[in-house]
Image 1: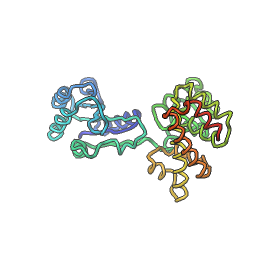
Image 2 (image 1 turned 180 degrees about the vertical axis):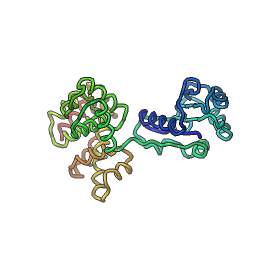
Image 3 (image 1 turned 90 degrees about the horizontal axis):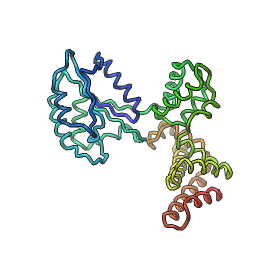
Image 4 (image 1 turned 45 degrees about the vertical axis):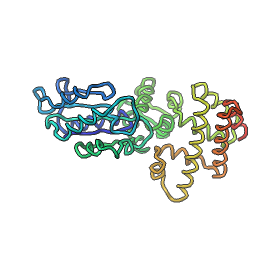
Length: 324
């Protein structure tokens, strides 16, 4: 059987790969496992490996990374030969070779949207391989993963500390693993509190943007300007900052709208195609719709004025905060 792994997180994809090895009751070894990269590989080498017999084993594995020809993403590589050769092979594949297409797109798009369903090769992949689409875990699943990881490292951790990790880092398991490893290095075999997380975890842009939105809405000018200066020092471009602020206000506005209609946070995250924790953050910006709309319109005008050369970008953002 052949497989296609699609994920937007490397750790999730690797876990699924291990599950495949278990399913076929085989262990990968150097003689019967080869990994190819479509961005730098040779399609003829991949096919030659696939049609050859295993070396003193029942099965062999061919892991094909970055099959971007299955997506609508533009590249400077001509994948026509890949599509032709894989189409021919899949229609008459070697039963002793387990071909695994391995596609990890580390961004916020839903896994179900990664494959370009209009392409014939995608229809063939769905027909000739078992497609495993791994979504990033939801908020509750992330809590369980983090708790188990700390317990495995002989650490205990408070519930609010787990929640703060998710708020700060987001839902990328690779980023979460890195932060957990860093915390455990300094707090080995001990209890971890929220203050420890605050001291050791690197917050991501989503958390910082949420905090800035909240401070602006609270009219806390001093702390808003302090956080703005921090983001600018960290290298965030003013135009990107304006876009992210407007996006956070927009998510807050839409979240309020859907909550009023009776949708729960999971349903809202599905409609907006964002992770539930972002919806959770947005739901905490409990301000009037009129205020949120005004902020979005003000940011749109600021973006126009900056691009038209009417105002300096950093000065313009500071005026926006002062106007709050």
